[in-house]
Length: 465
Image 1: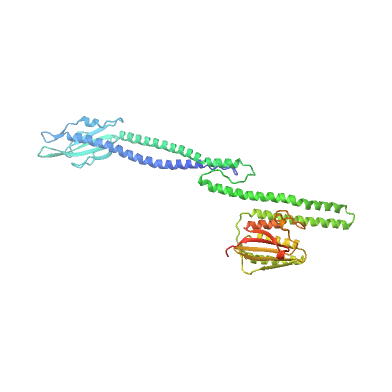
Image 2 (image 1 turned 135 degrees about the vertical axis):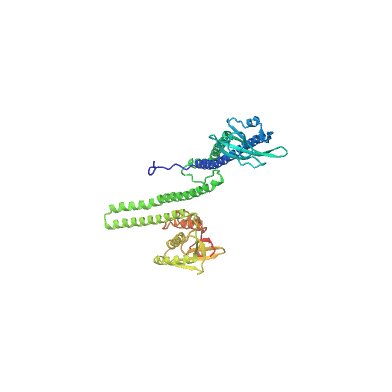
């Protein structure tokens, strides 16, 4: 039966997998152990039975003698055969052979082993009267003091007792091994359950949190899981940063766009009620200005959101001097159109810092735009790059009205504007400050040359070239 398309797969279980691997591995090793146990049990049973067979043949051989005619005479001690009796009701057979071709007594058709005269008993497996037997033959000689007559004593026993003994040893070993496997499975199951409790507590701690709680997880976990918890905390930190940026963007957008949109609606209403074309055009012009102002607000808010999203990202090395020189050159036409004298001062030698060019470009454009916007027609704006000890310095200086010292701290706050309440939206300097902080820099506001105007300075740590 095939799984239906799209049906959920069975969830992965560490406990189940560990138990499966343990049972399969133990069963494989247990099979090899049982095979070895069977071989060893068979060898031990044969060795034990062979020793009894050899003892029985030796007892019979010791009773052999020569009669008056020089023939082998033997009185079979039946006690020697009784020692072979067993609970398995094995049958015992014997034969005594004199000189070659002469059977003294016993079963003449009983198979014999190749025994060496005067040596140890010889053993072999055979079949007698339809039953498997184990045969032991012992070759000796009877002596009159003058002459010796060789003879061979053969004792055979059916193998039922050996099979029963081997099976008993094997079954007991299999039972012990099975109990060991089940015990190990139970121990592993308990151990895995106890070991996984920190994971359960981790899951419960995360599940019990409110959706707004993205603080790091502090639940104690084993060392093997700390990497996972660290990854979760890193993800939650990035998610918190993204959500904070989204909240800031939506809140700021709602707050800052309310006034321009109200102006647009008002001007549209005035245009609808205008009695002359001139009045309608004036209302439309004011509405268009409000829309343009809203667009600038959105652009700055999107830039702030981009800065928030880039928090914690790595920045590569870049040449601050060449970058500032090229960007200033791009802004000269717009400055000239506004009646501003924009220029660049700095060495042509590279000055390396670690920053992201796109964001740093937005920061520098904001500083130049602020200087052009607030400096007024005829102002001089200078972009300057230099080194102060181990720091790289980026400055934008103008000779305009500037910002009073007691208002400079608030000017870096979002949506705060200078005391003149001139044009702008209160986002330029905060954007610059946050971009500078993103790359380890610091924004400061000082007086311009000769105490006139404003000098916005960003200090970065210089990087190796």
